[in-house]
Length: 172
Length: 466
Ligand code: FES
Image (cartoon, rainbow over all chains, first blue to last red; front, side, top):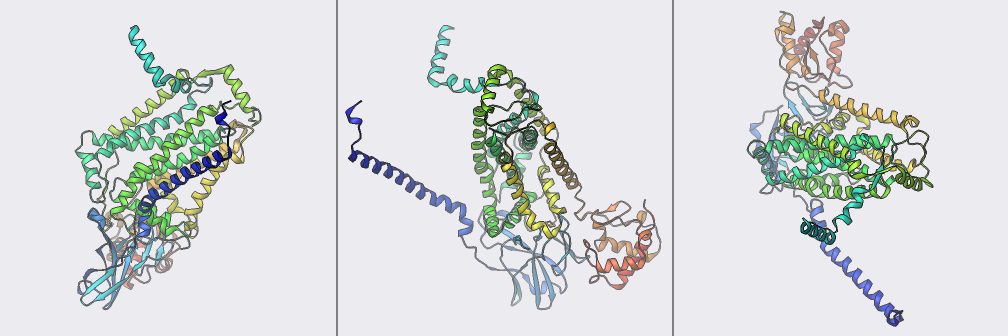
């Protein structure tokens, strides 16, 4: 056997230093490269979506007792959002100075509910969820009432606050 | 000739082709593994087809929320063979889901997951779910109204996960609402992330196949004993094994090629699913429904009792995944033949019947209101009494017809009311309309007295079914 290959104590510590150095360097480079990658993955959780009031029409254009579809621009659309830049809501004028805005998403699995004006009911095409005009559940699988968006009267205008798609949680 | 041979020998020697691939091609397999072994490889054939057609589609597709729909119209109507390409990718996905399901059921029924092939099963189960996930994300990339609402439905399911549901939903959609980032994310899931996982797992799945060998057809009374199995299998191969290529592989190739030809024929003959309306979240007159392979789950959502549904959306999939993954650890030895494992056969048949009936129910979707029902006409009113006629008009206007049938017209959600007067008195009818029922809205708050009288008069006139 070659004399040189017999381990000497100082070799041992030098080797383990080099091994640790190489491992440490690879962890470090992986971590540094990983930060922007993780940031891209978790961007939707990191970025705060602003809440903005959007005009959806003039107060006078809605009759008392009616429910109408209104649309408004989302809080942070991009140039490439296209038709997905906007959201919709069902706006009900309960009284002269009282408005309610319902999310269009069924609380069951999020499908778009339709307002059937003559029947005074919201109906969901997906699994047959039905809601009364005040958003409470009338029939079908939905576990809770339609979610409401913040709405306010600003002088002559009626405004809705941009809000997330309502996500129903497990205990609903 | 001689020089050519020499050149080839040099290439082969230095490139290592023979050395790398011959042992794989020639590895011995049990001689009696015949036509029932073709479904796994057919799944692989479909996967390759999906990768190739997927790459071709990606050359034509625009993964941007604003433009994806237009690029789909372009692929469908303008690009050379674009429509066929979409069709192949669609039927290829369908074929892959069918083949992987058959493969999985077969491995279960013949207990091929037992020792030493536990990890083959585990990787296969994950691959099965990845295939479903590819189907879901793929139909969404069509980015028509169905695609957009599928994304919302997916997010709602995520939302049911305890504690982190809201965040999971947000991550899936790439934000609070459907928007610019949603499609980009789903494109990445469908084109990069899921395929990367699938490639790794397929490589692993196939490597295991070489290491552990393909499972021999089961025989009644021949038990798997982890202590002796490997030795026995080796000896069996020496005695009765045949090289995979070409003596076993020809069946795989014939069946795989037939599958692909069938897919192409369907693609030309039937074509891809039609695009629904553009991805406009503010246009609500749509009736979202998933591609066929998601239809059973869709029905399950409609039919589960609402009280437990939110829990079942989480617990159901979690339990089935846990059950499937732990299966080879619960039982990894003993009998393999289906005749000796009647419960496995029975269970599989139950699952197949269950999924298939849900599918048929989903085709009908009786739970959905029939929004396109037409007003009743004199043909089905059978009366000249103005009150009854008025009642029939109201029956349509108030949405009753969306859920109830009169003479074969109307929805199927509630009972057929063609001959209601035979079952209920006018008084009972009134009470039912005013108070509603377990799955019917109460109309007490919305009908005027005259409207109610008219509807009751109409329903009381219903004495026979056509
Ligand atoms: S999503 Fe509305 S009933 Fe299921």
